[in-house]
Amino acid sequence: MKHLWVILLLMLGACKGTNKITETTNATGPVFTPIPSPINPAMLPAEGIAKNVIFLIGDGMGLSQISAGNYWLDNHTALEDFPVVGLHKCHSSSHLVTDSAAGATAFACGVKTFNGAIGVGPDSVAVETILEEAESLGYATGLVATSTIVHATPASFIAHNEYRKNYEAIAADFLQTEVDYFVGGGKKYFDRREDGRDLIIELEGKDYTIYDQLTEFKDCELPSSGNFGYFSADADPLPFDAGRDYLVDASETGWTFLNAQDEKGFFLMIEGSQIDWGGHANVPGYVLTEFAEFDQVIAKALQWALADGETLVVVTADHETGGLAIREDSTMDSLNIEFISTKHTAAMIPVFAYGPGSENFSGIYENTEIYNKLRKAMGFTTE
Ligand SMILES: [Mg+2]
Ligand SMILES: [Zn+2]
Image (tube, rainbow, N blue to C red; front, side, top):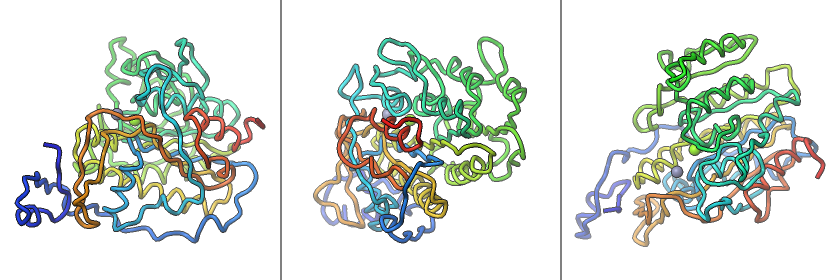
């Protein structure tokens, strides 16, 4: 029972006499106002070193998720406005089919590691992440996710652990690296811990202003000095479709806040975490609504970078999830989406880039090369 019609299909299904499931939960589509395409970024100069990096990861966002999202959004995604497109090979050191921990560690640390590993190599030894390096070199840094902030993808940029589900240990690593700005769920791993520590009090002692989900994100007051953290949920944040609405706002606020810091530049990782969860659940509407929200972030990041001129924007995924396919009886207005799996797949993953250093992201390469290309673009290495 994997067929799910997304839009306007009850009648069509009935006419055809099919047995398609008619799930109409998401039939109205997203509530976003389309963001107009910028002038073609390829026409604009983007040379030199990237002062800032906005690194956008759509977890589970393979080419078929992008394709379905594009058709669902009236045949347009912000991704088509990027001048440089490449593909990465996402396998891990232990499995042909990666998980999000090894996938994000490849981006963050430049090493192929085993599934489940957070910021450690195949020998379980910690490897410095690009966020940690940026922080130590005097850059402002940030992490935004629609999962918990200790979930595999954001965790791999700031924590070091051989098992992704050691959430309390991963949370403690937020006291080791002073990330300037973070937004995500998982408050309980910080203030209701087995070891009795209250990491929120400890963070406040390190000049953090911390809010939680009792305050709506838009009502938070950003500090004029020091760091900022927002816990969007005690555990996992809601799906977009169930009322979560902070990703676009927290992303824009993130690059504005980090850019205002008196530092060399910034490194900001933003994850659309739940595109993957829609794939695991085999629910097309879940994938599409999460993609649509993430597409807004991509559009706004590109607009911001175009105006700024010194910011590299890179968009990719860690892996594909679900083996999503758009079936032969689909039309632009009525997608018949089917999945082959509730797990990840090994398909190569598209990479989109704009800004200084973006030209290095064309071609086909290993996922670990994204780390090298980001460091080169920021001038951390000349190799
Ligand atoms: Mg993730
Ligand atoms: Zn997954």
